[in-house]
Image 1 (cartoon, one colour):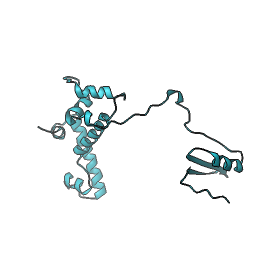
Image 2 (cartoon, one colour):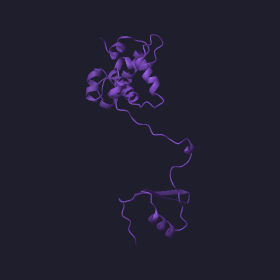
Image 3 (tube, helix red, strand yellow):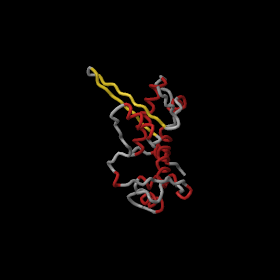
Length: 181
């Protein structure tokens, strides 16, 4: 049984043509990096540059994408189309996802599911942090000492003679020593 990369290499249309172009681009890059002769074999160039051959690299990317899709939980929007491609027997008009599922045969039952986080639609556009601008240095110090937030970010900026200066400090409570002078 031939693998997908072997089938791609034997034909010269569509995906095979694109893969040949990726191979050519990878070869030009490796020649430029290594500084080797133009007549060097592509396989030996890839070995010296510690690169996979283009066909295997594309196969690896496809496998990674399908694995990520197989790891989606049932409440994710893409779960149904992916599960349909995995379980259905489509004869005509196959999507690229059908081909990926056929080549790699993912087992969704043995794949760890990645939980998705729910987001409140009422909070879209609202900043998920508290912004406070103190009137004076004393007020700022007092507010910083009395706050309950674990992370604090202080920033300052100025413009002088057309030049801009800025600074920012992130303080994580319990990890930063505050010195009083």
